[in-house]
Picture (tube, rainbow, N blue to C red):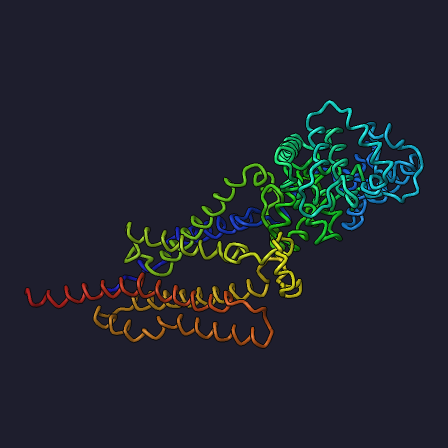
Length: 555
């Protein structure tokens, strides 16, 4: 009943299947596309051939926008842009030719009749715009100018000066109301000079008309508060360029919040808004990911405008873990990200399916025994899908790990709770949401051990199957190897225990996924061996033994 020696030879198709499956799986792994992250290599590919931070700043210098270009220069120096020195020289040359405009951040024809921008001022470079509107003479001049405006939106904003029902501000027409008066005039100047995006302009006008109708500032007061935060930090040109790229009042509030909680990151936040032409996406990304998102944004700025576009469009973290990637496929990933992601996962499944079928034919049943037939193909397919899912989890560091609470998230602070303890920056997890290299190495070692145990079990089954013995004797030999077939569980438990000990002593980073993955791989290994291989082989031996014992009785 045993297989003849010539039938046990390795089929020529088996090595080809194993090789083809391994190649397809490796090629799929090399594709630079991920489900919930973007790789540094893909960011570099997206930024290649697009303007760098310094190049974008040079365009602003050519447009005589000194204030915004200064932010870009600070970022270019921070990311070691090779063109930063050239931008510094160009900005210095423009500032020396137009020294009076440095305080305003650039030239604006609508302001020149009011403030004579080419006249020297006692203020320093890049002066916050509210500094110019606090003096009473300046406010009277601006008010007289705006009162002659034909814009209904400007007139509605000016009418809010007469509202006495306010919350956090002193009414503008009362003593102590100079800050609110200056903010109303600033909003009117921005509206008059078309420095607000169309959607923001419509929203501000609606808020002003509603406030005048109800005779209370209401939601408009929140916009004035946000304008106060930005007007104390940005000069005229910087503020105008930012609001041109802001779609709604909510984003204005988010930028005001970011300027308060992360003032050291303001050049990066501002530069990203200009380079992406969308302050809304930048604010959403930073509010969602906090300090880790700020570091990701810095990486994208270092790679160029295309990288900033890609990061904000995907709105996912950057996967900083090192790994190979197919540079030639980056262009296809940028154009067809979802299609390439489907191809990557399909490559995992197909590659592992061919690999398993090749090993099955090569090791378990080289003569087309119990591993042949449609049912075995279905089993190999299911196994390939399960192993592909494990591979996806191992290579996607952000798939199962939740992002920590953002340090930049807007929080509602009630006066009665102002003295209660709040989490500090030191108590919050500010580390980037990435899987540690030691964790990946541990998972890889545990998976390799279980693959070795799986192959050893299959080789033992093949060895028993090829012996010149009766089916009942082979069945007893299989029963004798039960400990070997259960060894995956023992190895898995020992791996879990070893990982926990190493985490306690500080050899590897604490991560329960790394520890319990060993147990998981052990369970999967034993289940595959005993259900897919041992059970089927024993069933065949029982049937063969039954037929052999029934033959003499029939004679």
